[in-house]
Length: 489
Image (cartoon, rainbow, N blue to C red; front, side):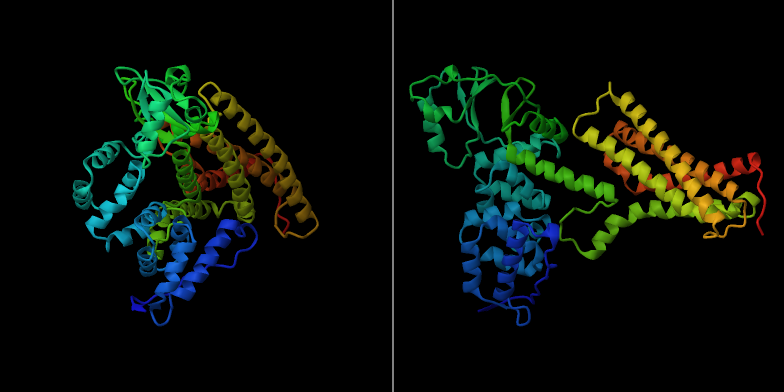
């Protein structure tokens, strides 16, 4: 037994319903094993048990399950992995907090060994969690070819094809044969063979590709050019990841070549890279919609999560203060007597209408269904739906408010007819206002290069509450000057 820092296993909730997936159950089993191997009270761990766990389970599963362990316990798990390949896989699939914690204790020579075992694109992602000075120091200790490939990827901006691609791939001269390609593939086991190999011209320009299966089913003396197929889809290194993901989704591509301005092949993006990018985009979209900048699934401390959420909630706070100010300004008006009773109804209805409109448009924009030529049609469609919802639910709410007052279930000291008219008109106006805001806000955000998912977050929700409430006030004021009313008490 060896002694280490105090360790306490973070117990997760019992899986229920949607949480009872195969992967979540696997994480729970691993966590239970860790709990037995790492004693939470004596701060001791059973070396033999940890080694057995590391041998029995995939490093990817170990990396995922260890996110529910304290930082000190994650280091113990890493140290007990059987070999450098397992440790490299563990680091690749670990979360950012796990990597940062581990890198504090790993010497530079071990970091170099880990990076040597990683594809260049994964190595770049790992180096993002290191300070610049240490990155430079570690790169200097790497193999020259490996360091050059990693440095080439680091030059590209994040969220671009240049960062998603790997520059380790198989490409051959136009006059190569199947045997030539097979020999090169066989001699480079460290480079992943994707679903195809590429053919290059004399100037290294991309000419076409040959499916990897053709290297197996054809004789070795067959020229690759006879098996070549044309390249239909390609991107430049500065293409945004949204464009890359859209190409993979629409055309079900197994791999996507990346070329420079001279049409020379500089990298390839695999389906795994695209899927990982999709997951990142989904996390960011969900966070934006929920009104937080925190990373979904990350094991961040409570205070950091608070800071990630607080700025967004300030918008809601200010919106509430604006609404309260309006109520205080109009509270002495005769027509305002019934208004406060129905403010929650107005804000609730209008808020949901606005969220529905913005969500539909954001989805259309995300999957590429919305184009400049169809924007007008989409806006007109949502406005028509908003008017229909406003009129339908306005009449329904007005009749309900009238019925509740005429039967005595609500005791508002105003003519029930006036109550019904105000509520009906207010709901209709608020819903139509919410439709306009929910429809135009995603397009406005997208126009200025801001993630449109923000449009359905607290910013627009708060703005919608303010506009809908003041629209309700305006409608009540107008109706009070058009429709006569009398006090019932």
